[in-house]
Every structure is written in structure tokens, then in C-alpha cells.
Length: 197
Image 1 (tube, one colour):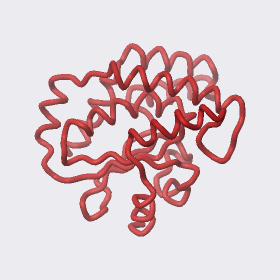
Image 2 (cartoon, rainbow, N blue to C red):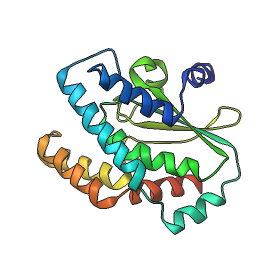
Image 3 (tube, one colour):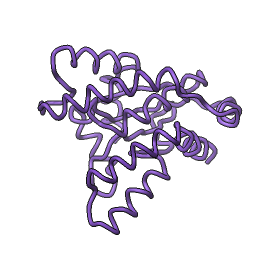
Image 4 (cartoon, rainbow, N blue to C red):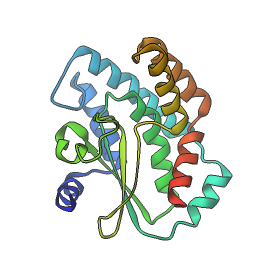
């Protein structure tokens, strides 16, 4: 697995490069990934606007800032994502702010569909759900993984699927409302909890 991780890190880009990639593709009426459709373009367009807003407005709590200062081991956060992914658009800006607060944390981004060998090592319930973050130490050992959603949102979707048998447009809308109200707090709580393990 370390060889796959090393190859993926070699192809990884910074968060700002990822943001530029998504925005640049939109000017060509494209999304990330080999599959192109009007729906994926529309999701990417919406997500680009969402990420721009969250890049400006996301705030870390005082507790998060204090706890982040205590992280003194070097780590790389490698995130598998795609521009059309709604959960990624809601979470990556917050994850980026977390990484920016501590010089020991290096955030790197790779596209899922170009890195399926790595993705398949980190499935969620057997699926290629994104975003998927793999935290690595300086020897490329896995410290923890996170994704595709914050813990409260994961429970919300899981409970809905149990009750209704599937994820449908209603719960997707409910999820977006939840993200707007939560303002990245649950992501922060999840990461601080993982970092303290």
C-alpha cells in the first residue's frame, strides 16, 4: 500500500491548485473526471460557488484553534475528491482552514477517478465515497482516515437510509440545510477527536 500512497502523493496538488483546477474546467464547461455530463457540470458549478463562499466565511472555533496548536507531529492529509461532489464542497474549505493553522500539517488533494487503486484501499461501506481523507505520518504510515461526511451528517444519512431504503433528493436537501446551519463545527470536532487519539 505504501507504494500506491507514494505514487498518489507524487500526483497530488495543493488545495489552491485544486480550486484553480475546478474553476478552470468550468470555463471549458467541464467537471473533473473522465465522465462528463450537464448534471456533473451543474454540480461542479454550484460547488465552486459554495467553496468560494466557505473559503471566505468558514471560521474555526477557539477550542479548535487551541487544540490544533498542540499537534507537533508532521503529517500529510491526502484527500480523494472530485469537483462535482457536494460533500467535498462543504468540507474541504474547513479542512483546508484546519491544515493552514498548523505548519506540521500539509494538505494535498488528488482526484478519485484518477486514483482508483488508492481509493479502493479506503472504501466506505464497500463504496468509493468521497471526500476521503487519509492522514499520513512522515513515513507514509496511516494515522487515521476521515470521510465522506462529518459524524452527525453520516448518522443522518444512515438513519434516513434505514427508514426509507435509499438516499433521495429530500435527504440531500436536508443535508445541505444541515451543512448551512452547522457551519463546519462538526468537521472540526471530528478532526480534533481524531488528532487526539
